[in-house]
Image 1 (tube, rainbow, N blue to C red):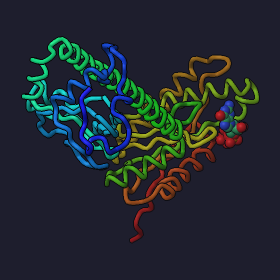
Image 2: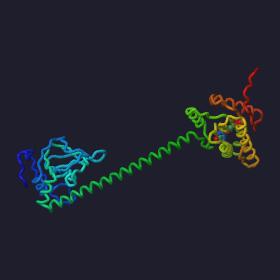
Image 3: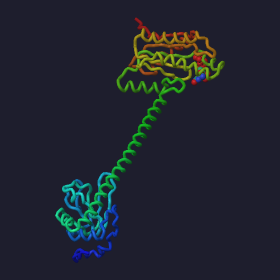
Image 4: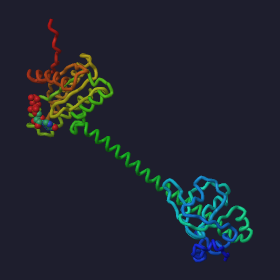
Length: 348
Ligand SMILES: Nc1nc2c(ncn2[C@@H]2O[C@H](COP(=O)(O)OP(=O)(O)OP(=O)(O)O)[C@@H](O)[C@H]2O)c(=O)[nH]1
């Protein structure tokens, strides 16, 4: 065992008493024989707590063995830091590879004593005891491989966690979209509901688009009788038939909506009377065709329609009032018909 100077020994604890006896190939701690050899040829160096030995990314050519005290290795990011104690070594890649970029910050955690080895000292070590050095090198390589493997495992785990987080995010986004869709949609018919209509108008306005040029209000005639005579399910089926007629005629810029009960509306993008009239014809024609099927319970019932052209600068309440007055007049005249709201002609 090497004799240490008074300065080296003044920290009180015997160096040999801290030496690990293990010859385990996977051990990262030097045996007492190895330590003695390294200490004999290396340079003793005192360190204070908090003293930086090297920083991550710096090029290094020396390695260290801890004789006394402890040193923290901080690998940065969210990698686990390590605290090394007596007889453990670090920085060996700098020595073995030469000018190797340090992969961690090495900072003395306590006051201590280190053995520092440069290339020339290590060369002397090889000359002195090649078998022991070869054993040390095998362990150093195993440590590097072990670190790499644990890094790969950590990266794999992190990748898996990221994938899981991404999947969660996708599911949540899908659920949110679905919820938003449900909020806007009438459950029975799949058409927009009142909330969907209000959001559509709001969104169209916010992007400066004209939400529509024509409005049809469609209301089933004597619908209550269908419920009463054939049951609620038959009534539902009739409402679905009306909805499917509206859905099939609505283009990508139109909006079909169930306002509630047996009342529907169709907001037509075109502001030309003849275009809107074609929608009306399609609806009445489809209702007539289904009525002609004479199914029991019925697939459809007669409908009344109030139609109007709308002023894009007006609001929904105003448009609705116009179409509703036309619908009211169609109902008053016996239903199963279409009435247009006629704009008041200017008095001269
Ligand atoms: N089957 C079914 N019936 C509904 C639904 N929502 C509302 N109703 C019924 O629709 C009926 C509407 O009745 P009314 O407003 O008197 O309409 P109507 O019988 O068509 O009378 P007119 O419009 O005057 O011709 C009511 O009996 C409601 O209970 C629904 O989702 N499904």
